[in-house]
Amino acid sequence: MEFDTIAAISTALGEGAIGIVRLSGDDAIRIADQLYSGKDPLANIPSHTIVYGHIVDSTTNERVEEAMVSVMRAPRTFTREDVVEINCHGGLLSVNRVLQLALRHGARLAEPGEFTKRAFLNGRIDLSQAEGVIDLIRAKTDRAMNVALKQVDGRLSKKIAVLRQALLETVAHVEVNIDYPEYDAETMTHGMLQEKASFVISEIEKLLGTAKQGKILREGLSTVIIGRPNVGKSSLLNSLVHENKAIVTDVAGTTRDIIEEYVNVKGVPLRLVDTAGIRETEDIVERIGVERSREVLKQADLILLVLNYGEELSPEDEALFKAVEKMNVIVIVNKTDVEQKIDLNQVKTLAANRPLVTTSLLRDEGVDQLEQAIADLFFEGELEGDDVTYVSNTRHIALLEQAKSTIEDAVGAIEMGVPIDLVQIDVTRTWELLGEIIGDSVQESLIDQLFAQFCLGK
Image (tube, rainbow, N blue to C red; front, side):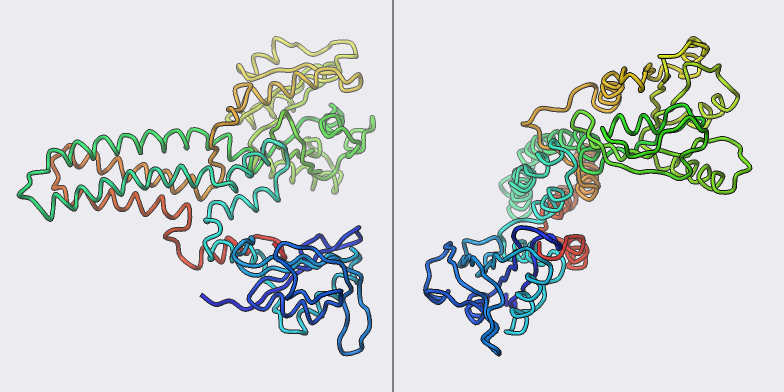
């Protein structure tokens, strides 16, 4: 397999202490040598060495940058190709000038995710590990980062490899039974199929058992704060974010549009949405905000319904309960620092056994209990231990569910006395579906689509 040499800026664009231009390919060292001026040519220095020098425009002999240049020779690199990383000053102009020189001397601008794609195509990582890389970049909490890191390290890949080996052994026994019927191995083959299939089903169920938590850790909970105007929705967002992101006043209708912010609640990422107070209003701008609030409710994983401790329940409050009656809801009765006017028994009846938390956001009281209620609702209080292999990717979950269904079909078929060669079709299909998770058997268009989600330079 032959690739041209690619180059890209691998650090975030903008002002910074250091910017890195990365090259990968057979000509990476040769091209970098045409830019580099130092004590020795890069071609002569040992692999995995960093050297000091300057980047020079050969057409004008102008020193473009002061640089530290790392040389890493194949196959002991991320892409399993020769890799050069030019570390220069982090200004936008600086790294762009270095990149343009590399492109002028024969490198091609890398596509988004192309370095990681080459690592996959060259066998350095499998597809599930590559997907773990993007999850690692996008992680919003320490827990989500740990899950992604384990996927990058190949924990899921190893699990899948064990299951595929078990299925491969079963297919081999079926082949023997078909090719050498005189050995009368059918009984043994049926028994082995039952044993291996039960093992595979059990392990897939364990993986799928982590899917809910894993998906939440990867994507976050879409959490919408709703309530009538001036009940403390924006104060709640500020308390969870630990920053004054939303304007808080005593004037009803202050929040006129939705405000989004990611927060970390006991290791769980919440995509928190503060909505405009839902009420009937003649104000055109506020009415648009109210309509947007109603729309975001439809995509929410969790609703935080805020009530006012100092006001009686209104028909608008009751309408909100009705609007979210089939959703995950935590009821928050805020402003316990004022005189009680709300009927908590009535609130409990409307809440219908859903969590209820009282808070005084003015005094910073009750927020810890709210965070625990969120953890209890989705994780029964605690996440699984660190030794658990989480499945968080929607594609992986769908393939595991298909694989489970297919191997269960094989077990059902053999129990009904279906000929062993027909049972083999379902076993082989299960093996193929598991292979799609790690990229052993997957369409090129899917590979292109997955890596297009990466940032340029990764």
